[in-house]
Length: 346
Image 1 (cartoon, helix red, strand yellow):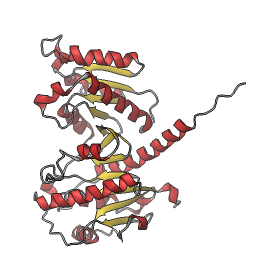
Image 2 (tube, one colour):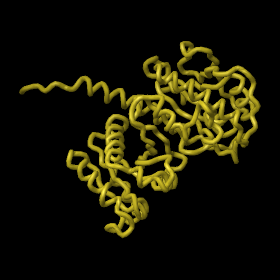
Image 3 (cartoon, helix red, strand yellow):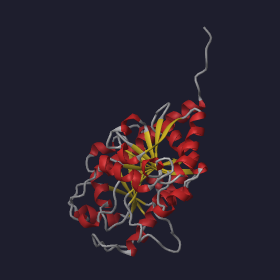
Image 4 (cartoon, rainbow, N blue to C red):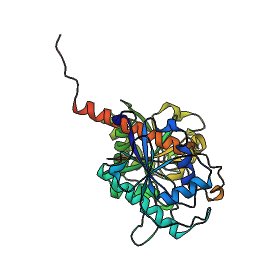
C-alpha cells in the first residue's frame, strides 16, 4: 500500500453503552476495508479489547499513545483514557457521556491539526453528554463551533441528498428562524458542497415549502409567499438552479425528488422522515460547509439492541466510505481550482 493512498479516518467512539463500538469493529473485520483508509479509534486499548472479546471478534488492534505512531493499513486505537470502564449495555449513563466527549474532543483536535484526514462519529446520547463545559444539542452544533465554515446537516445516500434550513430547532420556532439571509446561506453551502464534495458541476436543488401546500396563497400561512419564494427568485436570478417551494406532502411519494441533486427541507422532520424512510441503513449524516470532512451513520445509539451482536454496520461503513470519497473529491476540486487549464490558441 502506498502511503499517499491511505486516508486516515479518525473515529470517535460515541456512547460506550450503545451500538457504536460494535458497528465500528464490524466495519473493519474484513481486511479489505483497510485497502484505502487507515482508521484511528479514539478510545482506549482496554475498552476496545473488552468489546473485541464480548463480540468474539478476530479484529486486531494496533495501540498507540501518539498520532505520530499511526500504522497505515492497521486498525489503530489512540488511547484517550487508561482507566478501566464499566460497560452496561443499553443503559443511559452520565459517565458514558463523559467518555464520548473525551473521544470526540480528542478526535476533533486531531482533525484540526491535520493528524487525521477525516472524522467519522459514532452515535452519542444527546442527553448524557450535556455538562457545564459541553452544552451542544449534538455533533453538528459542536463541530460548527470547533471548525471553520458555515455548517449544514446534509443527509446523503446514493439516491438522495437532503439538507435542512433549520435543524435542531423546536418546530414552533422553525418558521420564525427562516430568513432571507438564512436561506441564502444554506443554499450557498449546499451548492458549493455539491460541486466540491460530490463532483456535480451544475447542481439542481429543490426547496420544500414551510407551510402545507406552500401556504395556499396565504390561506395556510404567508411565509412561503413573503420570504421563501422571493429569496429563491433572487438566487435563481444569480444563475443557480434552485426550484420551489414545493409542497412537501407529495414530493417524495411522487418521486419528484429523483429529478434533483439535493432537496432542502424547511425543518428537521420534514426532511429526515422521508430520507430515513427511503435510505435508512444506507444513509449518512454529513456536516457540509466546514473546512474539514465529518460524517456519521444515520441512526442513534440503539440501546435496545446494544451488546447483542445484531447491530447492522451498513450505515457506519457507508459513513466511512463517504468521508474518504468526499476527502478525495475535495482535494481534486481544490487542485483544479488552483490550477485551471490554460486556454490555448489554435
